[in-house]
Image (tube, rainbow, N blue to C red; front, side, top):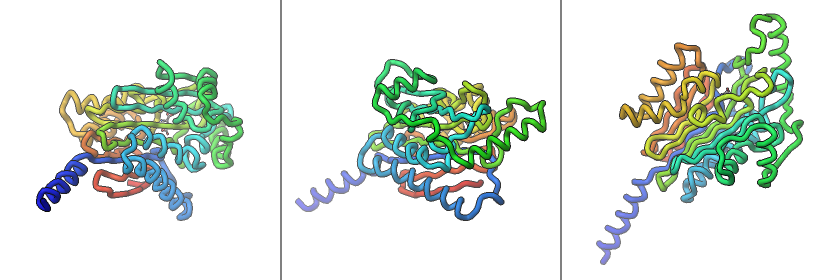
Length: 329
Ligand code: ASP
């Protein structure tokens, strides 16, 4: 009898092990000035990344869905003024905050996104509402805002998104634009302007989900939408291959359909997540000037964090429970 119970327990332990969970996040790729990054600020980045990871991982650990984990981790980063998403969003050329976000469920390729919103406190929640409560994938501007408020999401005054740090950045950007008129209307991705957030998770049922949320690029034109809310460009998840969330110069990520290209290479060329990601980030994007990075998780719980910029704030808890956060290479 004892032997049977022991065998049964071993079997349960093995099946539990056979179902890995994993979560990976990014807090944006770009240049970050080591000189302006005080030790306090650096540890704040690490603390917030860990907080976001723990929020998502706790859900996965209790048998929750990848979708819930992605939303929970992103909400932590949207609420932190540190990142260029939600509360800490960058300013447009006109001095406003316009937010974009998307989420995708790898089970049945369901997806939702919103673009150019100014009053939705947590854009990732609005993206999820679009996926779950409408037959559509992407809403923008007033339509997105009306949809979010009709669905009971928390709405805020646009002033909620004002932060002193981002306001200073747009003033600097404006001065730079005056000094070099030939570069007029070029959005900026320079020192410390980065901070888009994203998360990819694998749950115990083998489901993958990915999400991305951003304020876009400092000095972007009114109405400009980047890659973050574009399914296949900034976000993608397919249970058969991998989930991906991107950060970087959005126009390049849209043109190269980056978030879809990586899982597609895995499916068509039988490449690993690591190989497909490295090829896209370094041999497709980098030579054409597409600066940025990606995070991903595959069906087996393998995690990837690949970038061609000097820094990408990032972190993961992998299938073995190993936790790591980092900013520089
Ligand atoms: N990809 C975002 C955008 O182009 C910006 C970023 O990730 O830093 O809107």
